[in-house]
Image (cartoon, rainbow, N blue to C red; front, side, top):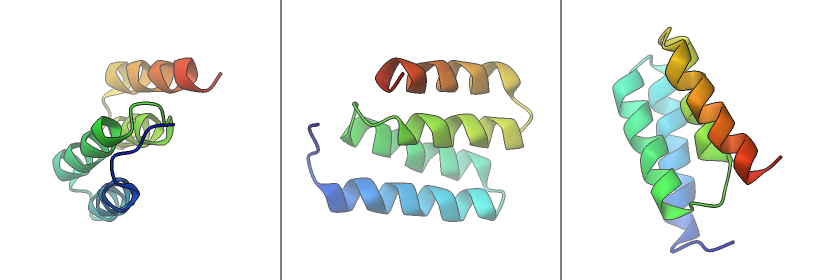
Length: 74
């Protein structure tokens, strides 16, 4: 697993979770995508992106995100 800076990865996930709780879905997706860029091999950001899309009733993109997570961690 390659991580450029684990604190940035964790911080991005945490900020995404907080934004999602506040129903700021665009912000949440921005943070989760940043986490995904920081660690391309971790399925967690993909799962978080999928869950955010579900909350936003964007089911097609949710399925895509979950499929990506499954390719990383079947």
